[in-house]
Length: 285
Image (cartoon, rainbow, N blue to C red; front, side):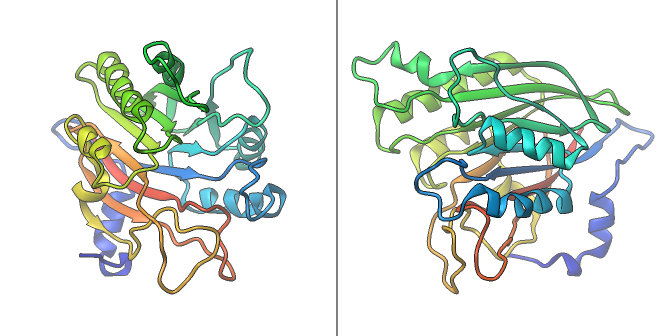
C-alpha cells in the first residue's frame, strides 16, 4: 500500500534527523540511485546539454547523503560534482578507460562522510576469463567505497554497478554470482548498501538470488511514499506507464529502511533520463 508523505509529518521529522540515545548510536541517512543515461548514447532521446541542469536540480532538491549514478561518463560525473559542490566522489581510474564509458561513480556528502577505503572490481573481465565465448560489452564496474560517518564514526560499505547484458545470457548470471562473491568476501559481516541498475525485474532469478544475502529496500521499507513502481518508463510520461522496476537499493540485513520512493521527476511530460531516481531513507545502527 502506498502513502503520501503529507500523511506522516511526524515520521518525516524523525527520518530527517540523526538520533542519539542512551543506547547504541543510530545514524539516519538518505540514499539515491539514478541512471542518468550516457551522454553519447545513440539511443538518447535528449542530448545531455538539454537535461543536465534538470538532473542536477533533482539531486540538489533531495540532497541524498549517498548517491550511486549509472549511465554516467567521466564528463557527466565531473560536471555534476562541480555543480553540486557538496559531494566527493569515487570512480575507477584506469588507463584503458575510453571516453563515454559508464563509470558508475559513487558520490557522498563530504559533510557527513569521509572515505576510508575504495576500489573497483572488473566483474565482466573476470567472467570473460572463465567463459569460452564471452559476449560483447562485458566490461562491468563494481565500485565500492567504505565510508565513515563523521559524527558517529560508524562505517558502511557502498557498492554501485550497472548490469547491461541480456538478462537471459550466461554472462549475466555469472556476473551476478561474481558480484555476490566479491561483496560478501569484502564486507564479511559489516554493514553495506548495494546500488544497482540490474536490467531485470524483482521476479527474476537474479534478483531473487540477491535476496538471499541482501534486502530489497522497496519490499522491506517501513513505508512507501511513492505511487510509482516502474523505474525505467522511457523518456516521456504517459498516463499508463510501461516498463519495469530495474533500479535497486539493496541493504545488508542489519539496516532498517524507513522509507522508499520512486521519484516522479517529469517536466512538461518528459523525463531527463529514461530511468527514474530511487530514494531511500534508512538507519545505520
